Image 1: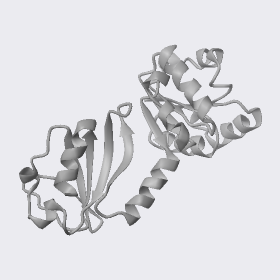
Image 2: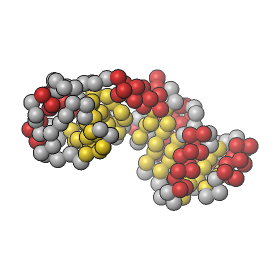
Image 3: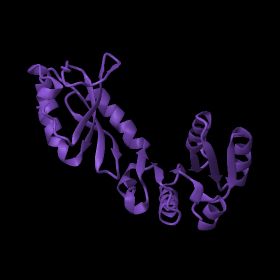
Amino acid sequence: MRVLVAGGGSVGTAIATDLISRNHDVVMMEHVWAVAERLKVMLPGATVINADACEYTSLVAADVRTIDVVIAATGDDEDNLVVSWLCKQEFAVPRVIARINNSRNEWLFNERWGVDVAVSTPALITSLVDEAVEVGSMINLMDLSQGRMHLCEVTLASNSPAVAYGKTLDDLRLPDSVRVVTVLRSDQPLVPSGSMTFMAHDHVIMIIRGDGSDACNRAFIG
C-alpha cells in the first residue's frame, strides 16, 4: 500500500518507521529542510520530500493521486485539517487519517474536512485514565466512520445485569447497531459467542452505532 505521512516530527517518524517495517511504500513530507535531510538518513526505506503538505503544488509534485492512505500527523491541527481537505477534495485519496493535537478541536475533524478517521491522543489518554478508575461506565475509545460509530468499552460491575442474572450474549438481545468485538478477562482476549456468559471485571469492547447506546447501557450497566 502506498502511504503519505505529512509531518516529520516524532509521531510522523514513528508511524513511517512502523509502516516501512510492514512493507508499505511510504512517502514522507516535511517542510523543514534540516529535518527532511535527517529523515532521509533515518528512513532509507521511505521517499522523503522536503515540501509543505499544505500546499497544492507540493501534493501534485508528490503524485498524491497514486496514494492509498494519507496520514496528517503534524503537530498543528490547522495544518492537519488543510492536508486532509486537500487530499480528499482535490486528489480523491481513498482514506485520510488525521492526528488531533488539541482535544478542543476534535469537532472539526470530520468528513467536511476530508477526515475519514481522526485520532486524538489527548482523548485516548483521557479514555485510558477513565478506564482505570471507572467500573460500570461506558468509555468511548475512538470514533469511527466520521463519528457515526464508536469503539467503546465497559468494565462490568458485579451488579451489571449481564453478570447478576447470568445472561448469555444471546440472552441480552443486543440490536444490530451493537457488535461485541471481544471480551478481556484476566488480560486474556475472548472471542464472543452467543453462549458466552459474563463475569465481574470483564472488559467488554464493542462497536456501537449512535442509536445502540441505550441498549448497551441496559445490558451492561443497568
